[in-house]
Image 1 (tube, rainbow, N blue to C red):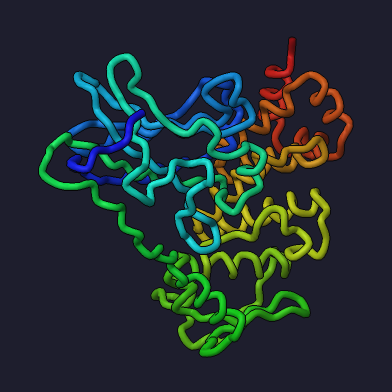
Image 2 (cartoon, rainbow, N blue to C red):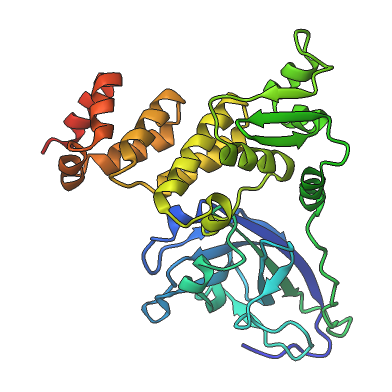
Length: 360
């Protein structure tokens, strides 16, 4: 590492690295990584490497972030900075262990053929990341800012500008407030003794089923009330919230959703959301529900979840259920449950496949 000279010139660029499905890669061993797509800064191609369990044995338990220079021919010097986008505000927040980029005395990292990789080995503790404000719907978003030294003696090193962070869109917040206030609502849904007010235009914009129901050739544009059957009030309220905000409540906030923290009740809620999402053709909600069910398989609920996966064509969820249920110790216990008997009656072919998979 070296200090930039007073006559060095820098080219600055940034790259956003989205990690979708963090739960599927967080178990990678130390030294294993995934990388971003290539990006160009200063006439050189780079990639960001994400090590979910550290790059070296001494960084196990930490997530590590590195920048790699692709196809190095000559030495290249650069300053780097990593940051994460928060779930609530959408701000990019730098971890304290990342390199400082606030003054011209920042140390340069040298990239060459022998050492094309530089980075932050102790970016964040893995345990802290898993429960942090940065993880949303099993996704992470990193931003890498790179200042590449061009070795051109024509200008002094500029101090990186402090740019005010731009907050994420608050559209969802405003629509959530609209739903809660019922201002301008023109349709009321009745579910037993519960009623929910909403706006036809919002529902129609999000769901082709609602669009057909309210504005289609056979729809009733003048209807101001609908009786909903086959779905409970908690599930329907969660469905409406998703339609207005494109968000599901945090899995850990079960008490706020169902009035308790019972894991089985949360699983049942996600099962019902999957069914409702399929019915109303809300593909993102269906995928989110499927993802959560994949992460919360239990002996008590796997049979009903497998039946739903088969009925609603959820291939990823079906495969996860079969893999879980086919484990010998799980299969033996599952065969004693009521769900197993229902599978035998309703999906005999599926049960046969499960038995064959579980066979030694």
